[in-house]
Image 1: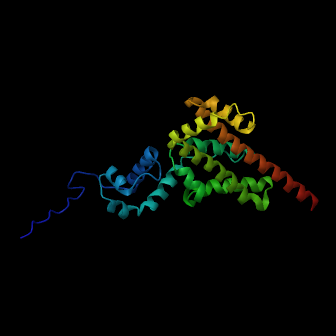
Image 2: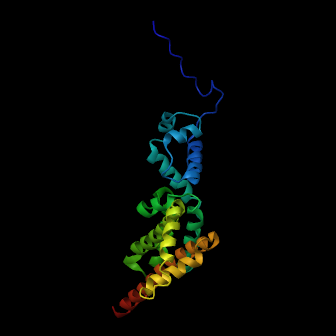
Image 3: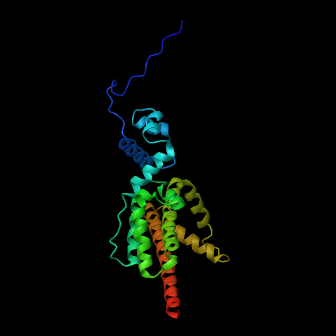
Length: 239
């Protein structure tokens, strides 16, 4: 005769509160901040809420469904500048805030660069951004211009996520480039070696480097958009 199986106790019977979607999302956001968006499993998430993965499936769905809600939560943390600002100033402020927020959640910037935000949360930002470009005179270029600048910013934030994750590899590469500092036959590499030497071993300088790199990428992208806008205006004037 087999040993009778005990029935699983309900959460209520075990003295645990009922699981909610809000609780699942909050713990998934916390896991993302701790380990990165792509580095946690549904089983780990379930352990955080003291439930089984089946409970998450029941309330939300599979892992991608949970990730979508994490993205929704993070995007809603972003601050949208007033639409009364000129388009270039608006994008500069928006993207500075993107970096500040997205660096707290490794992996989210990469997802946004690849797929954009869910329409449920990203729609208002996209609408305002594209509308500002339309009003500035970008015309049919507005949607592409918006996508280029937003994707560029998210890619550089994602690059920073990866660099923090592989700090040891970065250190090895820094040592290799510094070896070229005195190579007069390779002045380009010598310049890189000098540059790397000025920040090697200085965490504060490394942090400044990524800030400067992000700003340089965004501002040069906006420069290109501004130049394109000038050409579009000249074209309109000739019609």
